[in-house]
Image (cartoon, rainbow, N blue to C red; front, side, top):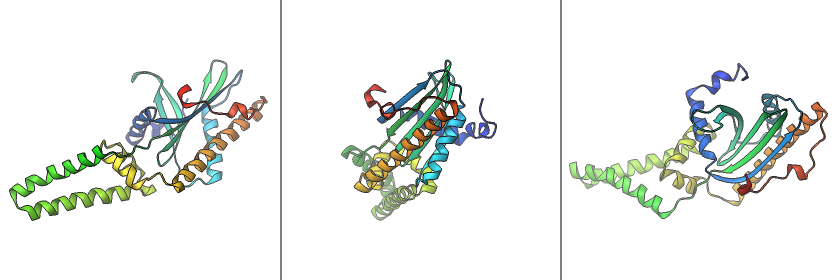
Length: 240
């Protein structure tokens, strides 16, 4: 049963939008997948998620967005299961903890949502800008059309710059989903530099260690055998 404190939040329109976007994550590039099953173990999924969250907060991971999401088990009309999602830029981690028979199941998925721009994206963006400028040129003159073109270009560019601010994460989510604008935004404002690669690697390690510590806490509370290092090893993406 859901915690009464988070139940209203999970039903809010803003949260429903984030859940719909989370459904799309499964179509993105998987980085790793890990799971384990504890036999004859009864444990609260919410308690496990809170343990992972405490470990993350202790590490003070910068620019980390955390959220509880409800994803369908199958079709649109199927039951929904609660996951704990952590996002930093385009790297998304989703943790699942749930009863399974008489045991307790835990899984961890890591996705890369980045999309790179191709020449077609630039051509399409240019055609749309020109298409909106041609009527201005026909109704007024070329100077007005040029000014309108510049205003549109500056507006879009300013919005993309604003979306990089952590306080405007909602705008970042919306822009990256636009078919032609999203890849251009990713390429120019989220380039895959050495610095960003290192940041993402540290973020992934922080998430992995936080999950491992939460699992260790579970095994200690239930008197179960701790998992070995090999049991924490993720499987290949194609085996997810």
